[in-house]
Length: 293
Length: 282
Image (cartoon, rainbow over all chains, first blue to last red; front, side, top):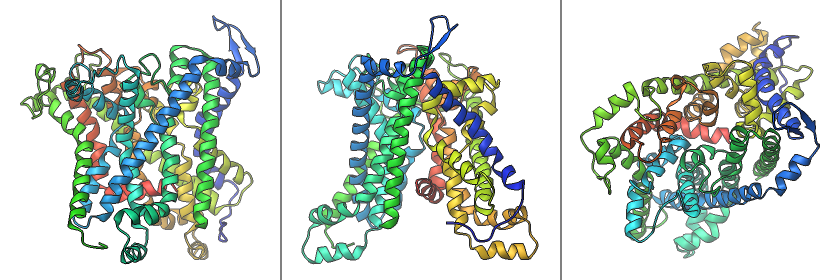
């Protein structure tokens, strides 16, 4: 779409885009190209000499057992976060959609976790699951579960998933509720007159009509689990115990800043960029389709 | 209401209340912990009703910070968070408004090129270019400065697209009328485009306020001095001392303080918040 009415100036448009372009060049394009370049370099142990090695950093990366494990950890983590986050939010939204009185209060009480910083969310849950003082850990132990996420990898994963899902529920809830409210009431009424009960109506009418929202949220939640959960992992488990929660964005940070492996860290950055690009493409294609709906 | 099924309405309320209970439980426990003394908070199990050290704990962290890990006073950290939460939205919205205006209302060489360059930033979140971006900022001497905390986060493809979409819906007649009346592009921008964009700006501001306040990775990298920490980073530093040393009551008081401003913004400006969420994902 283009405007018919336009203004004319030789310098003004450049002046107007200049701040955005300057920041983009200095803090986005330049660092990203540096990452691309460094991913093909190897530095010696003293940082004195660098050598151009083409793709050997990537070859090394994909032969690295720890990196491949980090991939598996990330896959498990994002499936758990997206899956349980969507399921819980959908249940809450379906019931909230039914309610006539008090909807606003319920909504307000469910959306505030969106405002909590991921790192703070992690600290809240970390405190409740703290093996020595945490209240939830205490009752779990009473029920016979020996909770210690500092030693048990599966429990550490559970902890970060709970914190990540808790933080994201409000977002999913709002979008599901909006999706539900946009389904024409007449359709549901017609089904009710035909004798379909609430469960039948949900499985054969409401859920299929909600699928664009569900798919959109699935992509958003995967992006969230991949890239916005660094703070949760860093504050709750630091990737431990023994890398059980070391997701890709956490690993690229630790390898770069603590391991000081420039080439390897840059290669990891490039792999992550490829993942973001593909997820963005999926998202945009979907939005195009939604426009035609 | 499709049909009247009292048990189902009851079930709906029950499920929602259970959901809210689970979602709110951590907040309640945090509040209780922040009102206990250092000994009480270490009791197993911890008391479930608030204690009497509320004001004491909050004045302690606000004015003196925690003894372990980080000793900077929390009011200072909250001030730093506030700087991020205000400068980032204002900066992002301003530069996105003017660049979207240029892209929509002018034809100039390289227009498409600039547009794509802004678009690409969508695919380059901080997480994937941590090391080189850090290097740029440290080469520019921006470590431990407010500029370093905010400027690299100001470029925004999302906001630029949002305003571009909106500008495209402004009727052409307005621009033509303005031109006939002798108004230049800047006059038109200031007197017509800006007032029309008010609701979009408000919605975006709410979302970006929360975004700025809750930043984690970036301030973690560019701040080394305690007086430059943001509230979120301060909490993280307080819990790194290990199990025995963590003063949970003070950490939790700080957590409540760090949650309060963005949570209030979401609750008070709920309408703008929801509009902003929906807009930024389109």
